[in-house]
Length: 533
Image (cartoon, rainbow, N blue to C red; front, side, top):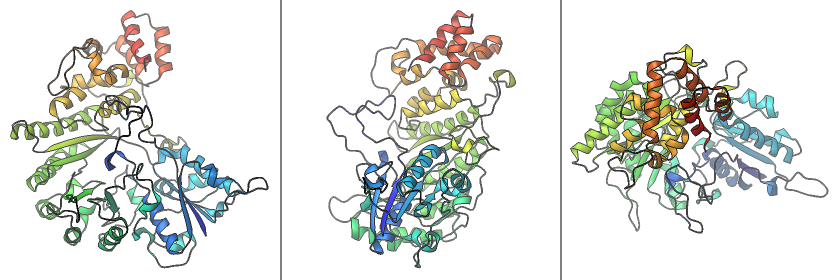
């Protein structure tokens, strides 16, 4: 058979000329190639890579493409013969990629002359929205984990999910496969969090998968790689945790274990989906502390979990973990204050460790605010096809000083704040406080702030902060804006509501309307900054 594997192109190409990943990082210089590590490259489409392995073992012809590839998808006709694919597999990722994925399915369906029986769609979005995809495209997806060829209408007994991914189909300049293997030692999760899609994608908790044969086969084929990125959703819940740790040690991922050959490189284990703080206790931490975990990822999704989270971090530090990369869900049943309090917890840890090291880094936490993306629609609102979800209501409905709720402006500004450190809040305490605000009031002012000021802090902030690169004093507009907005928030009168309603939707058109309507000269002057890009 001729088999085409397709990943929709819903991501930017790294290193594109003139591109910058964050507001404070300059783009690559023209004509200069920058070597990027796996941390800055795309995650590989593991499902397609396993299908490549499966079909190559059947001696099928396999090709991988990204996006709309007209060379391989020209529909067969008299003037343009095209390539007749027997099967086209299309992977899916997040539900908010709806438009891109539907366009991709439609494009390749047309390339087969509309023969939906040749199109197989799977992955995360496919498992969460199968009926919607079918209604839109006429293709009913393959849902859940692909454990049997029967799920794709083929004979055989292979557990496709446990096959070694075929790294040869990918471009190592784009995908994070240069130093990294990917795998599972368990599947599913024992929790059923309302916001999470895992219970629907991996509904059965599988407490143990023997990863050793796969890694050994990959080393034979692709050479040794120092990093193992495990995609388990809740490995600490496994009753076979001791066996899993022993397997990883047998593969050389224990502490002070190195790759073979020259140069020797220290092996690293990364539990990429995070470790559940509620399962972190002395016994489990002592076990996984035998591995060289770098970084350790612990979710901190609600302030109500602070006690559990703090205990988990301290236990991990006790057993030798020195680098943390912790996600913080926000804009889901929380408030801006809730996120600030969680960020402050992490920054206090960093301050404590900085003091213990007399200024040297002895341990650090990178905080990653992670915006909630709906996986379900509410009636016919198609909320799961977008990345934003907000409580509706104008400024008069809520006490925004003491109980601020998430608005599009606030969410946008959080994303800009964390962009300065490639999606994270810096582990350097002074820089972190500068980013989020040294007090809740400063933080609230930052949430209202024009994008121009957040993206160009050095230009507009007069105050100089420790640990930042040497620079001249800025214009002082940041300090002036904070004084202005905090005075408005404090009074909470009609002027505040006018300003809030003008900027909260993060809409240029809304700002322009407010400028045309307003008779308040000071408000109009500040609103002009929201029109700058």
